[in-house]
Amino acid sequence: MVAAVRVHKVGGPEVLTFEDIEVPAPGQGQIKIKQHACGVNFIDTYFRMGMYPSPVGLPFVAGNEGAGEVIAVGPGVTDWKVGDRVAYVVPLGGYAAERLLPADRAVKLPDNISYEQAAGMMLKGMTVQYLINRTYKVGKGTVVLMHAAAGGVGLILCQWANHLGATVIGTVGSKEKAELAKANGCHHTILYRDEDFVAKVKEITNGKLCDVVYDGIGKTTFPASLDCLRPLGTFVSFGSASGQIEAFNINILQAKGSLFATRPTLNHYAAKREDLVAISDDLFKVVGSGAVKIPINQKYALKDARKAHEDLEGRETTGSSILIP
Image 1 (tube, rainbow, N blue to C red):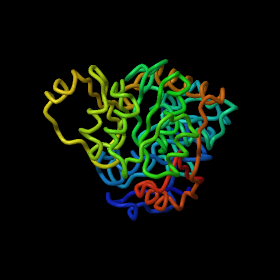
Image 2: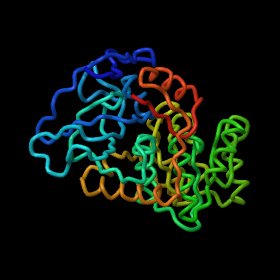
Image 3: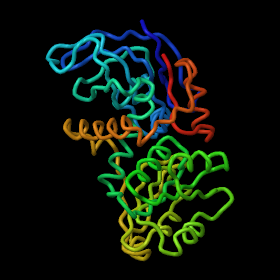
């Protein structure tokens, strides 16, 4: 029996229950890992609340990201051996001391990346990798608006976009978060609670506006985000921290400058094994070089997962949060 955090009924943070579970031997194409750290992400709250349906039904072990070492290998697995260091993003099963993984969805963790770094960056870092390299190709001179710039995805994206030569504008909820975002590559910060972010973007860009807006907030930043884009700009909605964006009249995109709008997810960008490996390799390279640092600003014991969710949803966290089994 090993410790895990399970959801027996969907709801608020209080439905996260700390208990012992049985983890069987790995089956065909699976590996079993001992986890050294588990990532905490906003998507975990979507599954917990039932906004995203659990693919395994109820009850389920929460969590979608982690890092550890291989302790057993199932039949048909040739690429892994006991003792290998591993990191992953897989729907559910993450908040546990041990777990099974599909061998083809795990990636080998380089020695220069710690387990804690990996657990704090796989989902967020791979999300940033596709957002700035494939969803919209960020480069020298690109003007980027990043909502929640001091959050987990935000701090990584600000650093990486800056590294690629972009001008990065970020919205944040407090002066402390503004300082943090600036320390992580954000050139201009907007206190969205006190300032009209559209007016500030116009001021910062001298009316030229942005090439791309990355929005993980959702309901409360839409449609104002569209007003921050220059003609032919791209609106990238990759999360719904404040609630889902409701259906909208697509003609609004034409009226505001023939804009592009997309709602991407890592699952599609990393669906093929070769894409998963390419995305993670690029992430490992940029973090390993020191160009992008992974700020793990909150660590909790596994049994305190409820507190981690309360802090995350209460906008009390910055950077990455992890659970230690």
